[in-house]
Image (cartoon, rainbow, N blue to C red; front, top):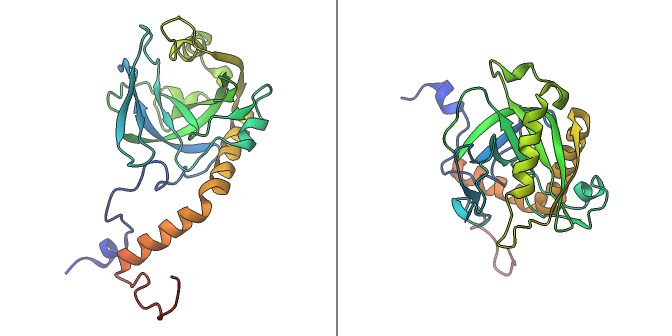
Length: 235
């Protein structure tokens, strides 16, 4: 017979969707979870397919620049009107999960993983008129970088490398990218961006997400998910 404690622990009977099925973190907006799509060793742009949740190849990078840090997104975030309002000059937001860059002293050489991180700042970016913020965070409990509490604690060259990568990572055959980096910001403004993206997500997906949670709870408990509806009910 299984131990009572083991049976009491929550678990998923199938893999949750990386964007919709995972929480944004333990203490957002300052401590968030990052789902990693790309590592500093990747010269291919990977991203999560929004429908299936599997990681797919978006495009091989045209330039020789590699991402200087781990790169992914914060689950259950969405860049819409609240995020747009925090970016002067943006016509709209990009309609994607909020991007995050994670700094780690030890090499992490694989994507499709989750990291717990501490937010320290961000890069304000406009891509083709769309707000496309890049939150900067450090790996929680990192032996070196956990000392950094704000973007000002990072070496300036690290910020320059991030800016260079994002200003060139969408460069096309004509050697232009359509990307404009308009500012960098510290921990407090980054927290506003994270909060805005969480609220944008709740506005866009909140009702469907709650329905997904109820379905999951019902299936895990072995309950009926609606088979007893009376004749004539629309369900």
